[in-house]
Length: 301
Image 1 (cartoon, rainbow, N blue to C red):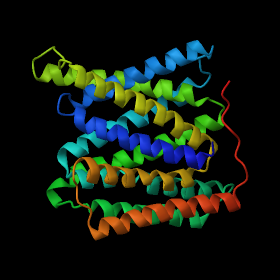
Image 2 (image 1 turned 60 degrees about the vertical axis):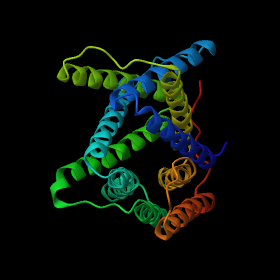
Image 3 (image 1 turned 180 degrees about the vertical axis):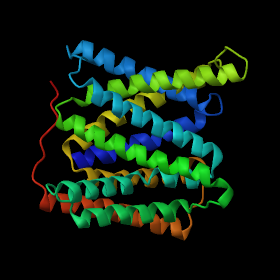
């Protein structure tokens, strides 16, 4: 499957996962959801690796550590900004990751003088971000400046995590192994966060489960793991800025889910933003097909 198709499918699954997270948040803390998501991912990848005789041993543990650290920190900062800022503002700041990515790549090209970044792809990323801003219409006041900084750092760390995924793919790490170690990091971080919160609340008990809660937690884990595998393969095979542009489609899918399931109303500016997001993704895909040769695929051995 082409990298662009993988990325579109991944964004759809992530949007579906977001619906499950929204529903599960009425029963569980964010840290617990992160922990269970990681546990399901570790079990899924572990069982898959054993069934197919695949090895989880890696020759680049340092790269996995930094990818997991940046990803988990980004997730933690994003949850913090969501708790302190309007949701639209926090989500928009997190979607700055694609703009950060473009800036990182341009800066690297200028400093090293060995790589070129297509200015048209950068423009597609920026156009997509304009669409995100129109859809979410973020607002922030002076009293929320520090919380806004947390959201910006979340986007920056997300960009670093995505670039590290690309680096791991180029290093020959299969996507299942990348996702396994990130899931492991998420499970550990979620467990530690939950333990700290429970200690602060002077309790040692986790929230109880019922069929609905277990079903939602399982769905979150499965959807996240499959989507992460697809996204990792897309970043390993495709061009970083093309994937960044297509990632904006997650806002489109989320907006549709919101209107369908939660009866959210979409304004004219939101519809215009969705059009810009789709246009940016299509433009980036078209540019990739014209100017980029077939990338080296990630090894699955």
